[in-house]
Length: 115
Length: 107
Image 1 (cartoon, chains in turn orange, purple):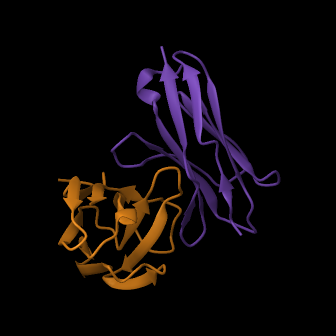
Image 2 (cartoon, rainbow over the protein chains, first blue to last red; image 1 turned 180 degrees about the vertical axis):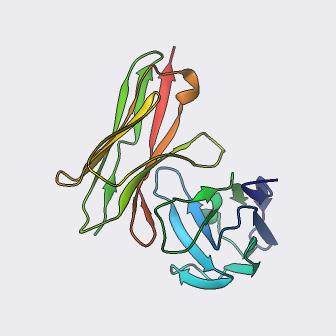
């Protein structure tokens, strides 16, 4: 399998639940990203990992907790979310962090609904 | 700042030509990307402009003018499958995204 794969594609969770989003890339890239995409808003960068080390954390609430066990896998652990956290969560990868001339490769996203 | 502006939504007719603009205010960047995103799917790469001018790829072309602070994506011979959102992004050490333009193609 090639590219960036995200699971699950859809997730409905209550505000007291704990769930995790998974991302896997088979491109040999060194950097991985979590983005939040809300309607009519620019992509919001949440976290960046380079070679399994977190390099960016853009003031994301602590109810979102990332984990990068190796350069091919990225998780986003969710707990006590709010309805305004409902959005499409996109994972992306790139050859290297801060080298953007080759762009990013995205997964299809997880559509999250918090009820 | 690096504000990036795109029209929220555009409508065009199958077979026609449409130009989607992207304007920005920034002190410097490496290049400008265009991505296409169908509803519920991953954004996919369309083009990357580093130098001023027009880059043509089949039915799609992208233009950049650094001095005027804008780019556009030109889509020719529109097909129904071109209905999607089109995102522009500036690159420096990370990508800075516009909010995207939703393009609706009508028969």
